[in-house]
Image (cartoon, rainbow, N blue to C red; front, top):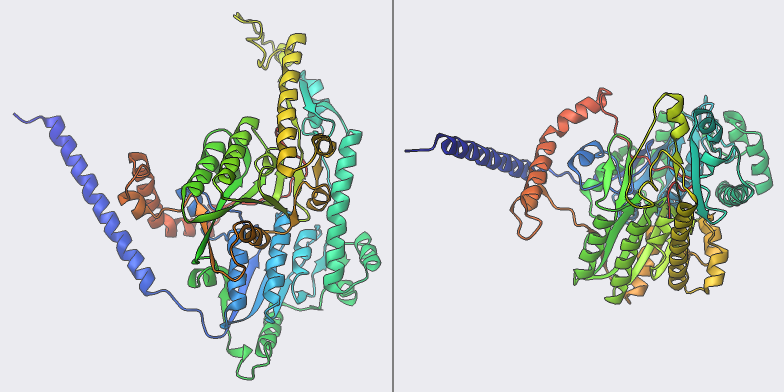
Length: 605
């Protein structure tokens, strides 16, 4: 006699298998159609790029993130695409719309370096915008635009070059009014992330550090713009003090090359493209326009193939124990110690990998999680694989902790780095609850059972325990930093104390080795692995991106039931993509992936 439940379950399983087979077949046909219809780059191509949204460091291995961030180029893609375009005879010019973007100065430096490298090919690069800040500052956008051969705004536009300032909120007064007490302790006086809860203005050490940080970034920005636009530095400083600068004044002072509308800018680009390399056969009027992102889909990365392999591991976001994560709605990343450590182990175990680039952009986070990642960097070196840390906008606190053991550290001039220190504490809220008529009582076993309760503050013995922990963490942090940087401990501790530095100042204090971005990190990785400068190199990301079909039918531990379900979800997302794109165009979905410059670290260490 048959079992109805078993029979019904078999039918359901059979339907799922059939549905899966159909899904796979549809995907295979779609992939074949894409390959057969892959377009070539036109013989005469003017590349377009609309820099209105910040570039992301990387796209997480998450179907939803991949869907929402499909149209966003990674920062590394941007640099490699321009490198490929510089060497591609089909590309005759570059034109970019540079609108205000929420991007950190270090990432802008990365993009400027790529644009300047493209210009070395002799091909013209033109930037334009309707305005650099409509009644708003646009320092970063104009700073980026200054890397191009020529810069234009439309006749109604202005240049919002107004200088750099930092403003911080302090809520100690609010906490006092509502009955909340912040109980925090730090190592040492420059570790200031908790000051907003305990003070009503900057402490003297905090102001000192921020003044130095702003000075360094501002001086770098001014000197770079002055050199690029061939304006005397004193004159540029006067213009900034009188900013925002009206369009006609900006043209007269040489900040822009003219007041042109978009169509006029494109006429100018075609004119330059026609005479760009002195070849009479080149005709800018016949050149095709192609978005940089589409060009990137039709060409190969300069590092797609090679005789030598350099691994790339991303360490992005607030450091935490466990897996890395991404918030698709807030656009924020977390650096999970399990995920990053596993990626480093995979690179270590890969026999082809000769060196590793650890790309870091993080304000810090968990001390224990940071230490777990630091250990894998040490293991890589013990296995004969040098590690080069490449820092983005932020490498502060835990972000510096995971970097400090690398063979070499590379930072941009404006990278906020250091913050070698630790803080810890809690909020005591009993008075707040009392005001609302809410009371608490408790029973406990153990003298410190309530130590981390958010109701009462620390007693004397608990303060002692907290400070004992802070001392231990600070000693470990500074000792490992001194060893990693080959500095006497006393010298390292002088530049530690929780203080943040710009990349330039950090280099002066031997906290980083060189200033630059991906290109510099790749060069140093070559040197560390004894790879000839003219040898071909490929970059291999870890964890390696798995296509859905590979995840479904591959072998090994990754082919688990969970992995299969993720792969099926990924395939489903691919077929839902057109619908999501329609929703995005209609304003129903707004992808966000902005990485902004954050002057203060938010967490410890």
